Length: 272
Image (cartoon, rainbow, N blue to C red; front, top):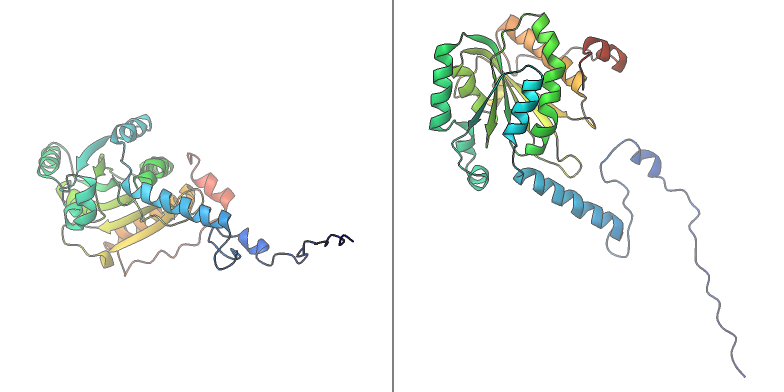
């Protein structure tokens, strides 16, 4: 006599996922779950994709021609410079070369300095460790600040676009152009949830040899992080304080209360 087939029933977990409400507030990988001794396949694939995007951000090329065209459309003059690192491979292995200008770029700035006047501020755009961040966010941030800088009478030097550059290269640029303040807009080291985060480093009296303790930083500038308007508000507050007190770094605190989104839009109507 044939045996009756064994009936198998799937066990359904009816309990709600306690992490679902928290995931709405962060892009961090929390509560991923388990599949045997590992994480679920979908989460593993997402992790590998994020890792690939971070690696791509480090190695991608800064398109200086595109940046110049975008700045020109905003009535911002610009120069294209290069650090002493001849290529990306050398740049990653030799951080010191990314902190100084190539001989050709130094000569170009020296000639420009002889033709021009001292400035209050020079903006520098550099690829850093994420050219993607500089390509996407540097021009919109500058455009957001532009009207406020003009209204307050800041003398702004031509924007310097630097390939294979690190933060400290703005010290040499600022010194050569006789700028009181340099602001470096640079791609930050990419994370697994933020391959295009832009950082802004402000230095009073930029001269070669400045330490990071003598700078102020506004970081995570991108639509998913600190908005252009909020970053512009913080930077303008720091710029005013730096000019009034003639210093930057540990002694200069970013302590201004950030207005609401509606108020920021009124303050920066050109936000993009």
